[in-house]
Length: 158
Image (cartoon, rainbow, N blue to C red):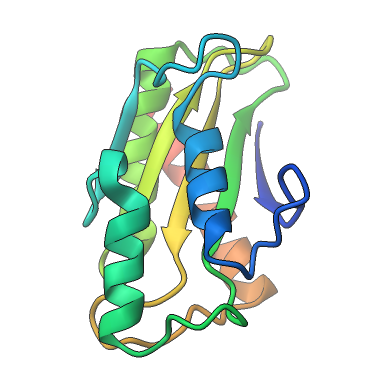
């Protein structure tokens, strides 16, 4: 059904552990490449997507976790394949529900990308908790719980 992909790659040789990666990856998630305009369907919980880099940095600075040796954000993608036909608006509604998985502790924003044969959603999450300043340090267990959560959300919508 859907596929969840954690993105660990760099963007235009930007190191995800550097502060400027926030700007680069956030721009990639929120803006179309072809016309450099925002996507139609974007949103966030605990953060205004248009100001996400500043707001992420403010949380990091408040909790003294703003040095460049730390991962700046977590980027993951939810893609719908295998005969699952999801229109952009439905993907947007799903994105809001999926974002709730982390929103009780981390700022998270999302954008629905419509530039491929299948609609997909990009998420950007602050790696520093706005609640207690802890760093996101979950492993594969969290990944599998997230996938199960997404499968339940998708089943309820489709």
